[in-house]
Image (tube, rainbow, N blue to C red; front, side, top):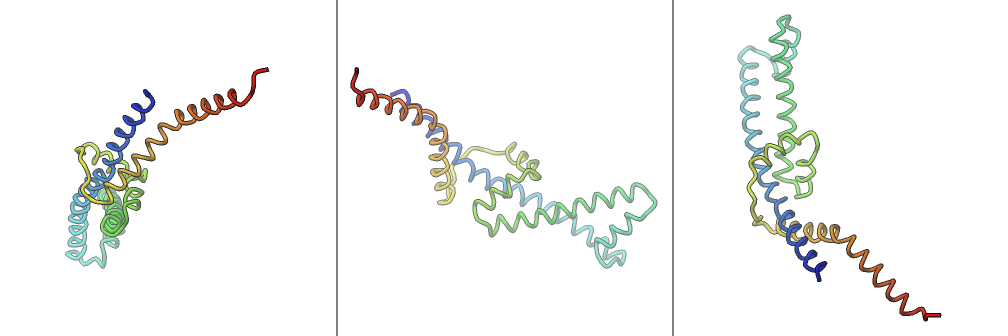
Length: 174
């Protein structure tokens, strides 16, 4: 009886946790979009500066700045390269979140190199219930699987206990 109550309680908790994953994905997409727009604004500024000074591309301007003897200009160029790399990654992420399936989004989100974005998203995360079929279906399936995983030791114990009872009944006492 206690195991059944514990089983129902763990399923409820697992379901609530599992339903938060689609919500987190939506929040992450919003955070990613904001970061993408801010970074795009910076990159567009780099492009405008490169065109203003007759560089064929932003990369050509940055390469020239990297060869400059002034340390602050070199450091600024290195920061611009990092921003361009971030922007390329964010563009890929925006494509995944616009066209990819739910599991591609999860893989993108939980990639270790992006944990800082995930942490920022979690810091501003509010619990909720997903309103999409995919979100609810994922929550139910993942909640059920998580419940089964948590309850596995109890299930194994009860199967072994029943098997030992059956064995003692089948074996006549000598």
